[in-house]
Length: 163
Image (cartoon, rainbow, N blue to C red):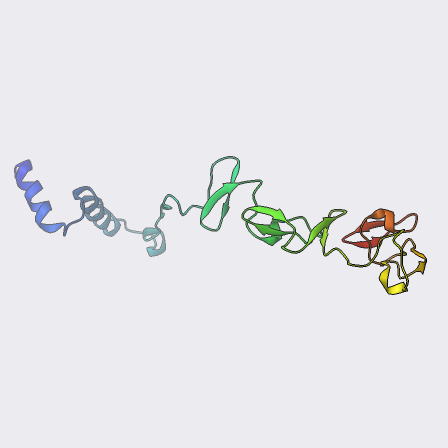
């Protein structure tokens, strides 16, 4: 049989796949039936190649975020943001949610009550809920605008006086 006759035979049998793939499959099928004493599980073990793009591998300095590679410093979701800060992931950056601001490293809503030294007539007008003509410094767990609103030894974190 001449080589061009063999090529024509392969073309008619291979059903549209490449000739190389057809020959590899044909040879593999032949060899798998010619291995006496080899268990069937060993004969049918296949190594599957991963498709590019589906490997979950990104280039150095990037990480997989859903189906895209992003900078390692970017966040994918809220769990990537520092714990205890109440920050959320917004367009790849950890930041305070809308309507909140950073206060001592924790996001919170700034209170509307009066800060220390503000003139007051009712206790509820003051963040410290203590008014003697002017708002007094706040105790632990009282609202604050800044650490100046808190008693000594406390600081304003998340707009609340804390130890």
